[in-house]
Length: 256
Ligand code: G
Ligand code: G
Ligand code: NA
Ligand code: MN
Image (cartoon, rainbow, N blue to C red):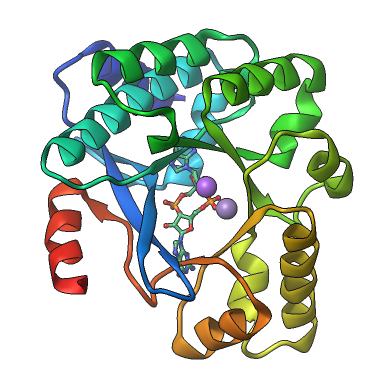
């Protein structure tokens, strides 16, 4: 209730530093190379402290504030990618978007403008969408995705395995990547069913020519299982937690 009003207030205030982005590295499992980062929103509320991102998104999605929030996120992330680029770091950043963000082409125009402004290639930006976003308004969402594909912005299907009609999405969408939901990855090392599900997703996506990212990789054993299963990319606390942009640069120099 008041959280929504507070969010609107901080978004209206351009210079506000309450909302920041954290970045989590994504690692190629065979080479160990950092292939990109996922941008994750953080809101430090002046009175409540860190707001749970999931609650923040749930609140924002109920209104047009979601659009303002995503606009801010996309601005911040692409500006950050440009800064890294100027410092010699060619990192690709993945941004999470929700249903409302894809109802029209505004986000496509915004991204296209920013890429021109900072002279960045489109492959430096990727969007993560969930299956629920696709269910809500398939026609309009598909049109936006087609435009993103046309300008060269890759799409990842997030939280794969938790939604509906997954196979249809894999067939019909111009996807670059599938992210196996962390609920399955977390159980991999201890639960045979979870392990079987993850292996099947890896095989299926691989056969369709899609890159597979496992999220929620928390230990070495899981990493080994993923490696053996032929998973391409891993993301999780085993490598690094989401962190502020400044910390990421230090993390990268230690990691290399
Ligand atoms: O960072 P954390 O694991 O707590 O994120 C919780 C949820 O919030 C995840 O589902 C994630 O996709 C979502 N989320 C994080 N940042 C953003 C964002 O910038 N935009 C949207 N739409 N969702 C985000
Ligand atoms: O829904 P989405 O896939 O965007 O959510 C990503 C979320 O997963 C982020 O909130 C991030 O903080 C969280 N996350 C990232 N790595 C790990 C991990 O290794 N373990 C757990 N439990 N959560 C993780
Ligand atoms: Na995501
Ligand atoms: Mn996910």
